[in-house]
Amino acid sequence: MGVLNGRTAVVTGAASGIGAAIARHLVDAEARVVVMDRDPAVTEVAARIRADGHVIAELTDERAVDEGIERAEAQLGRIDTLVTSHGILTEAAVADMSLDTWNRTLAVDLTSVFLLCRAVLPGMLARHDGRIINVASQLGIKGGVGLAHYAAAKAGVIALTKSLALEVAADGVLVNAIAPGPIETPLVAGISQDWKTAKRAELPLGRFGTVDEVAPTATLLASSPGGDLYVGQTLGPNSGDVMP
Image 1: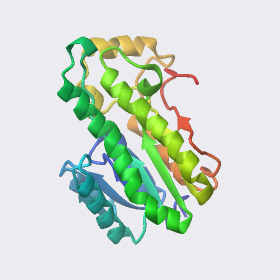
Image 2: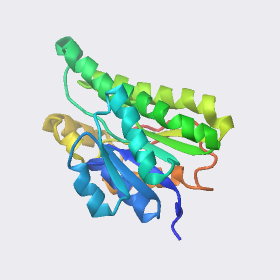
Image 3: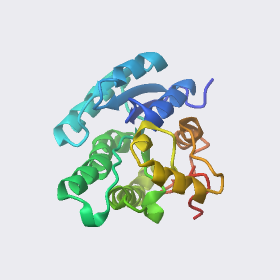
Image 4: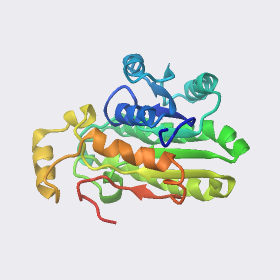
């Protein structure tokens, strides 16, 4: 049997990139999975990986998140694991950044994570059992030129993860983060070639990672006993970009 046999999971941002890979790896580990995204392409991912269901929702909208989690619970019976792997990434210097760009990035990359965590907590706390895995970024630890808005949001995700872990670990809910380095995904594709070339030169491995090199970390954190001692941790599959 797979290490997650019989467990359930909701994975956001699953229409592509890291989220889709995590969802596929959890299914391969025999978890029952519902994939969630605002992009209707998530329906194709659900069919391809043989997920148990899908939810299309705007994750910055409080009501849409609550209703989406309710629909996921109805499809799964319960939610054992939440993986928040959605996000947006744009490039802008602080001096040139509009308030709309700043606010939109924080709404998608941070506030939505809070909304999703809050939505799954009642069921997890009632069962004294649950895992929350928030996908942050190494830029939330070290910052990045032209990416202050994204780095600030991801730093917030890491701080939210630690704080929530302190609140709920005694009730059996383990909350952790994954902070990948640059990964070959559609998200990174929109960043300038100059930035990507300079970033590769900084990395001890000399290359960006792949989604299949990140996804197993989520499987570990969702599993037992593999993930049982991780509380408020930030795991970094990042090509050596950050060494805490």
